[in-house]
Amino acid sequence: MSGGSRIRVASHIAALPPSGIRRFFDLVSGMEDVVSLGVGEPDFSTPWRISDAAIEALQRGYTSYTSNLGMLPLRSAIADYLRTEFGVEYNPETEILVTNGVSEGLDLAARALLEPGDEVLVAEPCYVSYKATVSLAGGVPVVVETRAEEEFRLRPEALEAALTDRTRAVLLGYPNNPTGAIMTREDLLPVAEFAARHGLAVLSDEIYAHLRYEGQHTCFASLPGMRGQTLLFNGFSKAYAMTGWRLGYVCGPEEIIGAMNRIHSYTALCASILAQFGAIEALHHCQHERDEMIDAYNQRRRFLVNGLRAIGLECFEPLGAFYAFPSIKSTGLDDEEFAEALLEEEKVAVIPGRAFGESGKGHVRCCYATSMSDLRTALERMAAFLDRLPRQV
Amino acid sequence: MMEKVLRILEEDCRVPIDEIAQRLGITEDEVNKLIAEAEESGAILGYGAIVNWAKVRPDRVYAFISISAHPEHNIGFDEVARRIARFPEVHSLYLVSGTHDLTVVVEADDFREIASFVAERLAPIQGVQSTATSFVLKGYKLEGRMIDSGDGPQRLAVSP
Image (cartoon, rainbow over all chains, first blue to last red; front, side, top):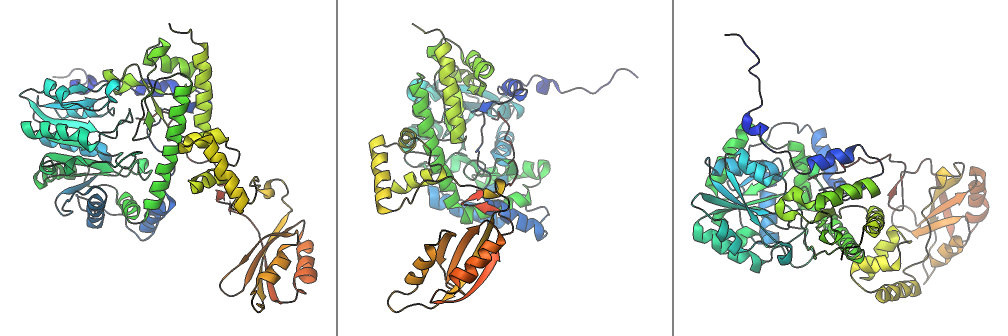
């Protein structure tokens, strides 16, 4: 009965592809003096009064577990915030679950909703975890491409075309990472009608809800009939510069939140109590700091988009998140060649669009949550890089 | 819009006009006009670097002097405040609420210079009742900038 080791990585994990940005991360890691537009987080530190509230909680001895759902004062603050800002009502007792970032929330949702082989329509280009999260839960991600010509907005015809008997849910994230695209209420309505017609759950990742530079964000759950079919994901990472705190939340029908909380209670137990104290402070007292940061992003957004266009790259107007997603097709390079050459020759890091799905190819993601001086340097270096390329006919 | 232009200049007064225009989505002419207006109205008092002199002249001395003064009929503290403000040693001066009336920030080459300024210039001024001098031992923040707080944390160069 003896023999070799029985320890092995499970085959479905071994087969899981690494995130598309992993290879690029390794390339950048060994280099010095890189100006990076390759990040996916704010360059601001968390507003000090949020950090101070967490320090205060620590000093007063708040170091325990909390309710699985998260502290009730935090859930109540989230409910108030969602009602005031987006006009959606959730019962803080039963319909809100505080998670370790949106990433955990999506994982819980996929595991709570999907049977093996169930399909999820994933709007692409998208955040790198979406498809993996669905696969890990035994589901099948079905890509629904969005296109640059349509400013990367999700169209119901594309959803219809991808629908099968196994389709259970739609997963979308607007304002969008990596494209910076938004969906207006008018854009969302047909998606809601599609979901209603086919009885699908809608997993709406609205982590960038506040980072809108024109018009108001529409919460998917606020659309007619959608509250009962939507899982709304949001968190503190982007709007309050709290990425490292790992704090998000998901809101939805009691039955589904309850199921998700059952998984969460076994696998995570609860989110960090210190992060929860910070988040309460954020919701109660930090609108001003939040809005100042958003105003700074907006200034940088205009500057970067103008700059990219001025050096000859086609770039649609990104109205949300903190990314520009210019096309680099005019250079004759593909997005990976472009990003690698730009990094090697000019030490500017941008992320190839393909890292976010095939429909991102031909584009690169440039993050403008970056200091003005870095944005200036990056644009100068990119201009020099483009000047050296043989001109395309 | 004026406030936004001023905020940008307050942060870095060397930002080129075309960049301000791009960041705010207005024309360069509009930016120039707003700046001219602010200069005209005195909203912009000048353009200077924020110098942490402790780096260059560690021996240089700063002091906060709290002054109790007699207000004068009709003009309050203005007369005595302006008289004090004219001394070149005076870096800034405020009328404040609380236990005293005026707070004066004074800079000088050494302690003795400040001592003699207080004794020979400030104290004898008509209307000045009493002074209390606090010498600055160490600065931690200047004009909204942290001093010597060390390198901030580094973000990962690439993240999703």
